Image (cartoon, rainbow, N blue to C red; front, side, top):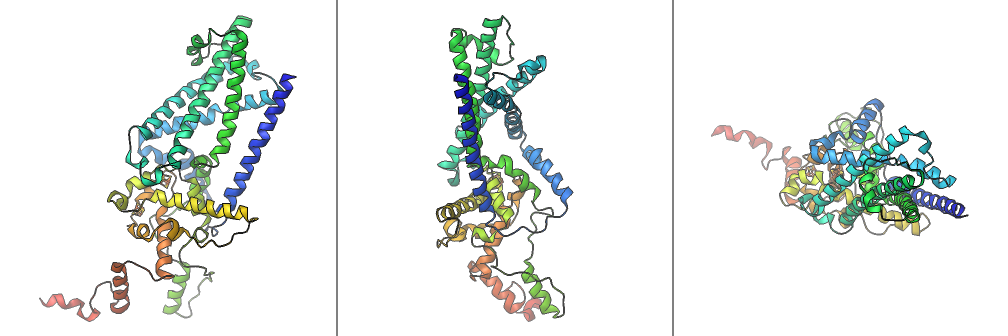
Length: 432
Ligand code: SF4
Ligand code: SF4
């Protein structure tokens, strides 16, 4: 009877988790679809290669080997250990305990491998936690990392430690019970060190401890998966499409706007054949003016701050932080998504926009377009492209630019060059 109640509770848990994950999936998808369609996505093989090397192989992470190694342990360890989830689900649905134990030596080998990885994950989490909270690395303490982003990062690290510990304690309790009931103990490689702590418990208490940690593990994993979809850890999944769709040519290259190129070509040659394009807004004012790939990138941002730590504008005390640009895009998407959800899926203008309410003109103009941010980003996110789009909007739609740039534009218009002198006077210096 107790087993059946437990099975029903387990199935209910799966359904509830599935519901929340599906709901969040729909929400994120509809936010990303607020954007304009992406440009061409040809050269599929190159894209696939990029995705495998950068998202799966974490190639760019290895620019900083120590952090890369820890991240790899955390990433691979967590994914591999959760193969154990298959057994947990089978046990939960069938009301069994360690359904795969019949595999004998291979099962012991697998659990031992998972235990080693679990111990490494705990060590990596403790080091990451210390780096963030004690070592005071500048990039983890900038203005955009206060309050929720900081709590979010710490919560995940603490949760991972709890989940891994629950897994090890369950194994320790099960080993002692097996020893007491059948005289045989599997001697798991890491959890055997926890056995002395549990030895004083009675067999029934050990069984309760094993059940408790089993439930803690599965509830924790499901809660983690649901929570993951609400946090920056969505990058675990979205890094794959983000790198697949990232720019294949030099990411620092600023592409011309097709509509403007067409105009210029027609001015030079009225009979030129140009591909017609739909002109909506020049540049970007709000998230709906960005591409779906740019919006996807915002959801994929890990908030690691590598871009900001390489940004010359940020380093010289300017207001700009490329990480904040990506976080702002995500926050604005969420704001629109929430408003739509409250209004039966219909979006009504709220008088706000990404430019102005989230990203200031001062930030936009602080960018030197050096592209250091994209080079530093472990998953090829390109904040510079967004900043250029925001600038295009300011100049082409609102005729707004800082004084120094306005004079340059005037000179280009009047003198055909950025200098404040007539074209006829340009060679005067040769007279001296
Ligand atoms: S391109 Fe702009 S945002 Fe990116 S690193 Fe350079 S100055 Fe900073
Ligand atoms: S844009 Fe890239 S480098 Fe910058 S914080 Fe996000 S993931 Fe890190």
